[in-house]
Length: 163
Image (cartoon, rainbow, N blue to C red; front, side, top):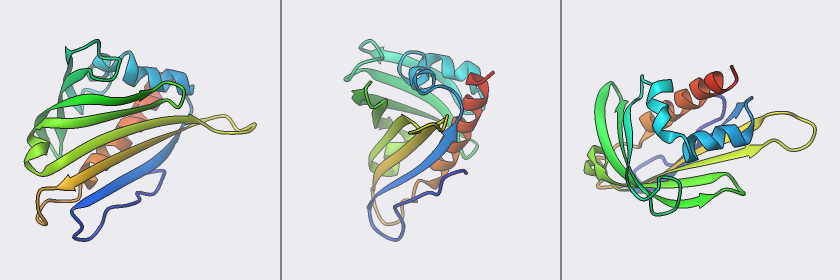
C-alpha cells in the first residue's frame, strides 16, 4: 500500500480508516469512473465486483441508491448504499451503506472517495479512501480488509485508466 493507513484501532466502537495512493491518470477521469461509469467497474475489476446496479435515482446524484455485489476475504457479499455526498468541485463522493452483510457487523459504514490533483508542477493525482464505521460491539473487527481491497482496486483501476 502506497499510503499509510491511519485511524481506528483498539476497542473503540467508532472509527475511521483512511489511506492515500498516488495514481497517474487524470483526476477527472478517475473520479468519473465512480460518478458516471460505476456500473462498468465489474468489467474492469471482476476480482472484486460481481455486479453494480442503480436501483433508485439516476446513480450520479445525492440520494441515488445502488446495489453492489462484491468479494471480500474470498467471500461474496451484497450491499445497498446511498450516495449522501457528491461534490464535483472537490471530486468527493460519500457512500453510506445501509443493507447487506456488512451491516451484520457495523451499525454505520460509510466509504468516502476523494480524488485530488497534486499541486504545483508535479503531475499526478492523490486518491484518498476513507472508511467511517461504528461497530455493533467490541467483537466486531476493524474493517482493515476493506482498506486492503480499496487499495488493490485503486492500483488496478489506475493501470486500466492509464492504458
